[in-house]
Image 1 (tube, rainbow, N blue to C red):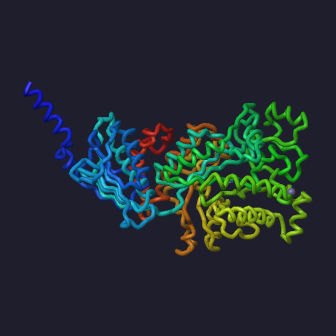
Image 2: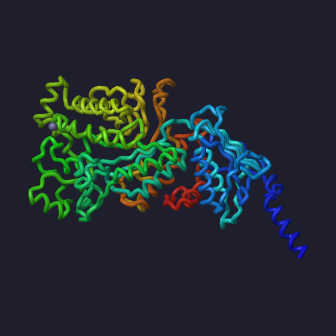
Image 3: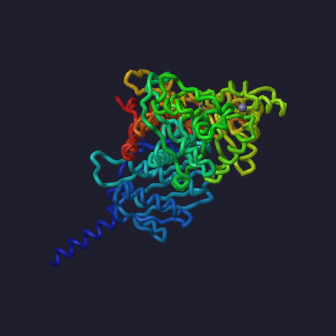
Length: 568
Ligand code: ACM
Ligand code: ZN
């Protein structure tokens, strides 16, 4: 009996003491630290910190949200429920999180892992969040297979801060609707990679995805199409399947709150004046020619839509891809009123300082023959349809400026007259970005080569799923080695480049599984360019070694990923 009590007592003492001596002297090499994006500075230290049932967290009350996140993250990975400590006691097995003015960068942090404690310091809640992401990556990537149930984090001292302020990813939910579970997972992926912007493409010719209270038909009519072309444009037939969906304003609020917890800003995109087929199908007066039937590609109209057109309906949601001629009429007052009302609701829903209003690929054919547009051009002394486009964009920009917002537009907004205060997303290469940066405008670099993730990801495309126009490849290596700061820019002009972004257009990407395949691991390469300092990022082979271990994060999240770079 006495012996049993002694054994139990000593077992309790042993487990409480965390057996520090065992973990104090573990040796590590750089290969044990597989963090992406790569931190600015990382020291390899001796020892490992063990997460167990006695681990506790001490934190500043201002970091409560981040501490909750750390606690639930540790629980999800280790199944241990860590306790909260009210004081910082280094003799314990403790993780502390503190805000500190010694950290200079807004999103910067330090993370010190020793055998007996982990210290996180950050200037802001954002930095603390990124420190937790780093800790999470260290924990996940050091798990052995099969998992031993012993959770060790290699000791290190990390000083880290981002290179660019804008580290974005775009998801096109217009071509295919993705439910809010996938949208949340997309945000999780952004956060995993220390990216901070979710550019949410919400409106298209093929679907309008955001509830607008003042114009309910946008989602009653515009959120649905009766079929989709099969095969690459020009496809040969319709699948005759109804497709669609939209996000209610309550769901949008839920997503905005979710993103905010992960320090991700959502920039909504309401594309105009092109790419508006779904809005026009809902409210035909938005077109220059409400009485003209929507031009469809003949052999890919769904049966249902044929019936609608036969019954006298004039405007329908597009069922094929490509650039469409039926755009917003920029000469009628009613178009401006409509879009001001739409933007007022959008601006109220999204706290982001920026609202994206598209501006890309607007064909001018209708404007050239529209009496309203021509009259508007004459009355406002505009030179041509290009200036009509910039006048339209300027109008919406002024309207949003009045609501305390700034616009972002695709690089077509550089055509015609300048839109002051507008941020330019350079997608047709970097030329637009260079021009905008030189004239003092803010720029986000997202050149389609290499940042469009709907393009092929390998040169040998035989076994690859269908992609847009057969374009690419944009390989992981292309993305990793691409320099988003063109040499044409001076140092001070380069400061106008806010950052970079990867874009996932979804004409040919209809499922979450396929979307993930196109995103990963290319998004991981984008994140390193977005976050890590220039000097650290050019050794592709070294990146690949880290990536091979980093992929455990994908597995932990249960997301699909392309395997090409992991084959040998
Ligand atoms: C775009 O790819 N149309 C911006
Ligand atoms: Zn018109």
